[in-house]
Amino acid sequence: MDGYIPDSKQAGEMKGNKPKDGPYSKDKFEYDEEKDLFICPNGEILSRKGEYEYNGKPLYAYYGADCGECPFRSECAGEGKIRTITSDGYEAERRRMADKMRSEAGKAEYKKRTETVEWPFGNIKHNLKFREFMTRGIEKVRAEHNLACTAHNLKVI
Image (cartoon, rainbow, N blue to C red):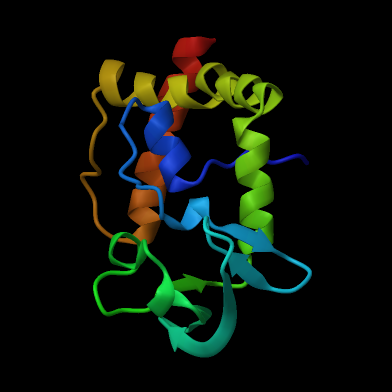
């Protein structure tokens, strides 16, 4: 299988939302997978200096060494602060997927989702007016969901 998964920023752009990013947002920092470090837009290096756990998952902290002398420090990190970037260890894969999604082939492939995946949900929600479950409990909800899907499939047939 060949996946096409937009990140939250790309998904928002596809919906027509304007991204909230500046010249020093995380995606403007280049990631060097081989050396496991970030390079800021001004060429400075942010190396991995810390590791901690958040919600049971490991996160890595990258700090800039020469932020104190940078003329864009207040824009990038904030006045009197050092720029920090956190990552979960899958930064290289995430960036490859983002590049794939930005390509024309990726956009064309992702557009197929509208025809194959999204319309059944729209049909069930809008035409069948099934917007919430009436039952409680996983087994009862599963049965109710199966009935809604069966109704959709019968309508299609």
